[in-house]
Amino acid sequence: MRSFTVLFFAATLATAAWAQSPPLTYGPPVTLEEARQIASVAETEAKTRHAAVTIAIVDSGGALVFEQRMDGATLASADTAPAKAKSAVMWKRPTSLWLESAKTNPAPLSFPHVVASPGGELLVRDGRIVGAVGVGGSPQNEGDIAKRAATSLKPGPQ
Image 1: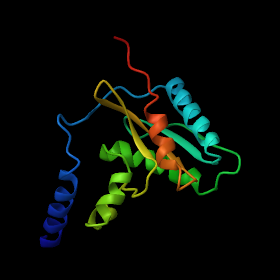
Image 2 (image 1 turned 45 degrees about the horizontal axis):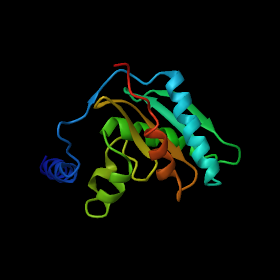
Image 3 (image 1 turned 90 degrees about the vertical axis):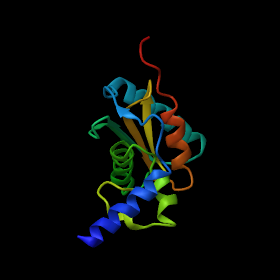
Image 4 (image 1 turned 90 degrees about the horizontal axis):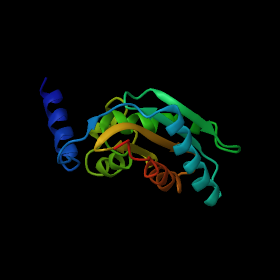
């Protein structure tokens, strides 16, 4: 029990730096059409960078909505891209933050759905999480590609 308490305390401290005011909540899920548009932006960005990647979009519940693997993308990226998207939506934070946290506190790396790698970004509309995008297959580019794709989400109807 003591080790669980210590682990929980360490994880709490690690996540305190990521606390948002007000905290993000989950909203209605991203649609298939929106997911296709976001993936198109990611693909265009990847082509600009001469990178072959897999792009995955999950909804606000972490379920896969859309995935595409570009020609030449690594086979493993078909697994890592959706894992990054799910990690981002489940933990309400970009996956790159886990990488930074692991440098000083590796304990959270054993938690479910933690991916400590750039390439998982939240899709946020009106302050609510509607899904996430995950990009895998080009370590030097996937974080920037995912960020560009995430920022392409259109605002909801006013």
